[in-house]
Image 1 (cartoon, helix red, strand yellow):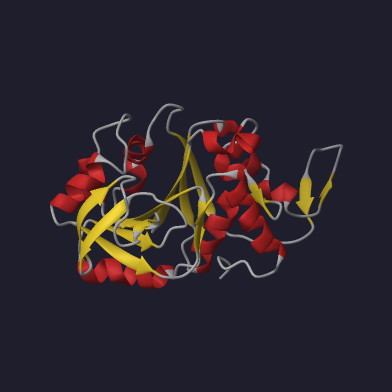
Image 2: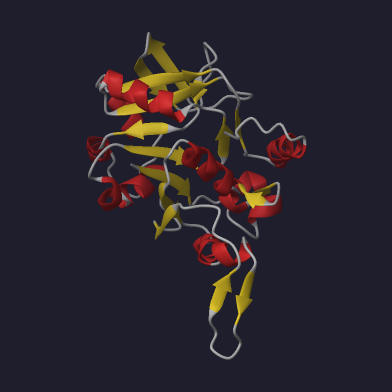
Length: 254
C-alpha cells in the first residue's frame, strides 16, 4: 500500500526556515519532519512512499539521493569512484519523488499522482504534522466502514477544518470555520482510488470541494484520535516539537 505525502507548499508562516528549504525539510532533532512522518508510517509496515513535491523540490530530491551516504559511514576509492558502505542501511523505504508543480494546490497534487495510486487503497497525509496515531487501527476502521475516504479527527491546539459528525459518519466538512465540538481535520487519510474522481485539477484545494462533496455523498468517515497530534505551522510549533524530541519523550515515535 502506498502512502502519499504532500510536500510541495510554500510554508509562508514558517518563513524563518522556508526561505531556504521547503517546510517538510525543516528539522526536528536534526532530521526533516518529513523523515519523522515516514518513520511513523514505516513502524506500521507502510514503507512505500510517494512524495508530492513543488516548492524547492530539488532540496527534497537531493536529500533522498544522498540519504544513504549521509546516514552511514563509507569508504571511497578515489581511483575508481567506487563507494563501499561500512554498515547496512537502517531503513528499507521505497521513496518515489514526483514534482507536482510549484503552483498546484493540495487537491491538484494528489490528482497528479493518480497513476501511482490507482491500483488500490492508499494513505495520504500532509508533510508538516506528527501524531501518535495507531495506523493499524486507522486502516482497520477504514476497511470496516467501506467508504471512499477516512479522515483522522483530532483535538486541535488551534482552529482548522471542522468535521460535523453523526456517529462515525461525516455529514459536513468545512475548512477553518468556528469549531463547535472540538474535532478538526488532522490529516492521516485513507482513500480509495475512486476519490480521485472528485478532484478537478491543479487549482483544486483538497480540503474544499473534493472532501465537501465526498461528505455530502455519505462517503467520508472520521477516525477519532484522542492522542498526541501537532502540526508545524509556525516557529513556535517547531520549537514545541524540538523540545519533545530533546526530552526523549517524542510521542510520535513508535
